[in-house]
Length: 281
Image 1 (cartoon, rainbow, N blue to C red):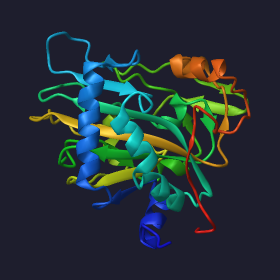
Image 2 (image 1 turned 60 degrees about the vertical axis):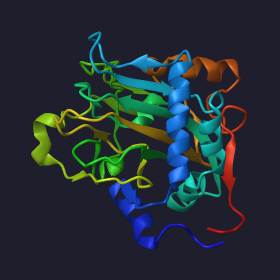
Image 3 (image 1 turned 90 degrees about the vertical axis):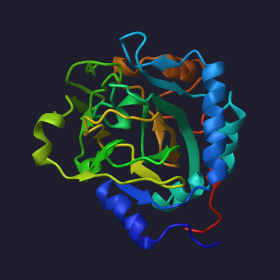
């Protein structure tokens, strides 16, 4: 089977921590995901939330772990090209689902995405990547940016709340030999970093390493409602790793109730296999 990605795209992902992919997702997928978000908003999961503290103003909305509740999301998870793309980027023999979620920033919303990396929000360790798929054309100053090469710093940063104020959860510590640090103040030290950012048309996407720092750099307030769908997947080397009280939310509780223990593979009912190679990589 022919590869979807070029060697240059794979190289960029591995060296820089994020890669822009042009027109890899058909418009039918974009329309399905938009429909799924509308369906979810009408009948949200218990995890649905607004990150905007002030009431009766344009909001920044999110729901997650809904792929099994929303048929459009489930179809995308299993049948879109993402899992195969992820296997090429990570040289994976097998790709398993970690978690899906979506974000919707209403026109005029002053809420923004804090600089963070996704690995700190999950009780997992290993090789994982994230799809960032905008569902409207999105200019580079309207979306998030990625800190070039930050996935190679060999650092773990404490989790940052998305709610306005962007509070850091927990204190610097060492758990199971892993050091968790305060995230760097990117916004006050922009000149110290190189950023990756792209204009995205419908069908374009960014895929990034779970350890790549990213967040909102621009203070531009959107004049149109912008939504995106994100999907995290894991390579076969990924394991369950319960580290830090700051990840104790209902996702962890469900994992524990399902019998997942430290060191277990990211596999099974909660983390189904989405793609498996047949000596293609």
